[in-house]
Length: 420
Image (cartoon, rainbow, N blue to C red):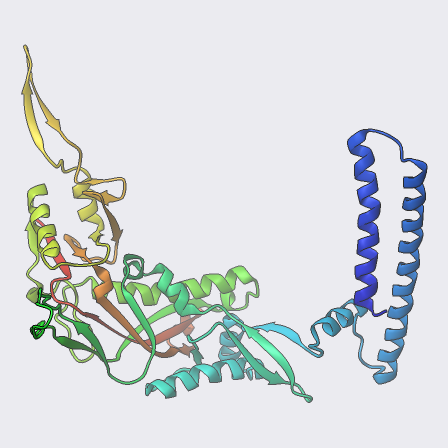
C-alpha cells in the first residue's frame, strides 16, 4: 500500500474505535466482551499501520538522500506533493513594499517581481497606453504563474487585484455603474434608445418600431495622483503595512475618480466631464415636492433597473432635518407644528437607497439608474517611485497613473439636483 492508502485505512479503523466508545458513552455502560475484542483488534491494526507508515517514510527519506544529499525536504511535504503530483512547487507572494524598497535603494528586483511587473507592462502595451513608472500592477487577474530557478520550477505569485478593491470602494459601483476593464483604444458602447411596439393583424406588415441604437465613445484619459510614504515605513515587512500601502493607493485613485465624476467640470480631451457640469441644469430642491418632481423626470424616462440617490454629505445633513410635510394642529390652549417624517431617514429617501460621499461636490446630488453610467479602464496601474522630490523630509513619493473615462450612456437616466 502507498502512504495515502495506509492513512485512509488507519483513519477508518480509528473511526471504528471512536464509534464503539461513543456508543458506550451514550448508553453509560462498559464495553461488552465482543466490543472489547473488536476495540483491541482495531487498536492493534492502528499500531501496525502506524509502523508501516513510518517505515515507508523512512524508505522515502532514503530515496531522497540518494537523489540529492544537499536537498532537505520534510517528509510530510513530500507526501502532500506526491498526492497533488506537483513536485518542486512553492508559494510566493508579490509584496509591493519590497519592490518599492528595492527601487529606492537601487537594489535589483527579484525574478518573480520582474515577472509579475512584466504582466502589467504587457497589459499597458496591449491597451495602447504608455507608461513611465518602474512598477506596473496588472489588473486582469489575481494570480500569475512564472518560472524561476535553474530548473525553472513553477511558482505561483499571489497578489490582491488592486482594481477589485477600488471597485468595492467606489460609490458608483455600489450604485450599479458599469465598470469595464481591459479596454483597448477608443471604445464605442452601444445604447438602445427604445422601441415602439404595435398591435398588428395576422398578415399585416409589421410597422417600423422606430428603435435606434446610438453609441457613446469612451476614450482613455490619464488620472494621476500621488502618495507620500516615509522611508521608515517602506522598511516594514508585515502584512498590515502592505495592506495600509495598498489602501492608500486605492484611496488616492478613488478620491480623484469620484471627485471628478461628482464634480462640475465641463470635461475635455484630458478629463471626463462631471455629472454636475453647467449643461446638466441641476434642479433646485427646496422641499419634498421639488424632490418628487425630480423623481418624476426619471420615471418618465422608463428606466428598467433600480434607482438610487447619491448625495453630498451636506445634502444628506439637510435632508435629515427637512420634514416631508409640515402641518399645524390647534388644541384648546396652543397650536403645534406636526411633521410627517424627514426626507432622509434610515439611509433612504422616499424608500429609495441613498448613498453619500465627501467626494460629491457640496450642495449637489444625483438620482437615477446608475447602470446607465459606464466607467472604462485601460491597462495596468502605473507607479513611479520618486525618492528625490521629498528626500529632505525622509519620504518617497509614489506617483500613480491610471487611465479611465466616464460617460452616461442614456440621456434622461440620471437626474441631478442642488440645494440652496
